Length: 205
Length: 252
Image (cartoon, rainbow over all chains, first blue to last red; front, top):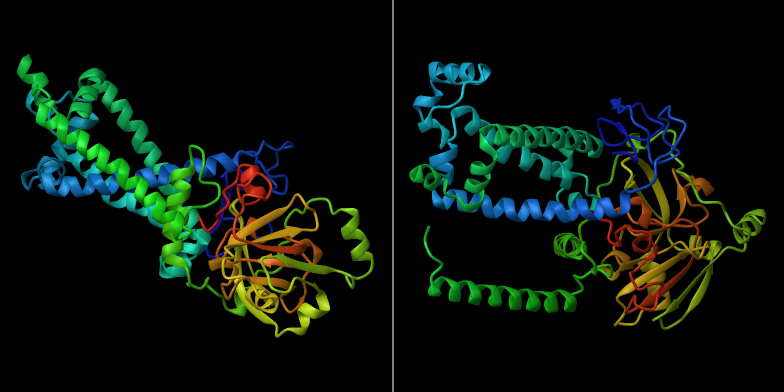
């Protein structure tokens, strides 16, 4: 991103073509016209290695998570919203409570509300698959085996642009998620995440 | 809280042992079938090996996407090039008439080819995309001779596993495995968009490898060495790229 803070739509894009938009940041390459009088140091080598290593972690743990969520009932019990939650009335109550920063009741506090459920489903089944797909669509080797992966997105540069926005959305989710964990009680929530036992804490009280 | 039972402990221990020995066996098999890249050491080695191995299994024979002539980028982009050395300038002054590509290593008939000789072979062309690791890309028509044809002329030994290629600047070198070296779209390119290959795009002779990022398509090629091991080249990481912190395999 820093080595080429310009984004395009279609198959190709470079300093000679018109970008869709530019990020107002300096670049680590002298050839990119940024308006800044200096060039940042190149950090692409190790950060690319880290990126692809992290990508494998995401793919492998993600697969493990989805398979176990299917088999343990986590998906059905904790993530899919109940029928009652999806009525317009319940939905608007949930949004209103959320906007009023109302603290959840004791009973609600240990399960996900409908907004959480829908957000998690969106992150798990839309954002993550999309970020992996658009990433693979930028790989010249991968698309040699599966050209449709990039052509249906409109081209390699389109894939890069979508990849950028989806990563931003994931980053935003992470930030909001961490803030909410802190607001909901950092210690008890982290304990629940690690042990998977949300109930024990309550039972002891 | 449940106590960690002895049975659980034994099962976990056995599973961990099985897992670790399974990984060991997998590594052996991967090595044997050429699925481990030369830069597999270090903390990023696992991710790099998974990428290379999975793409090798998936893309051994697949062809890079080719485009319609109307999709050729106009004007063609000539990226930043390193300062050209005196040897290059001398050859350039002579119109590259004395440019030579030497081929040696594990070959039956080591040889040196002039540009005219390379051009005497049936030329091929491909309209493919060059994607740079930085994020930009362009499409051009590349004209040249498939590397496999040159390798046929010199006769490679059956145990050959890699082709190492050097630019006229000896610090700029890369290598590829035989799947890429024998791939029909891997060219020694001497022409572009129906014309001579401009110096800015790697003329008079560059490697062209459309299934990997641009930095594998080294410009100003003067030597090919066929080998069964990359250990003796530079730091043994496969090419100059890992020595500068970039991955050896760039199919991403």
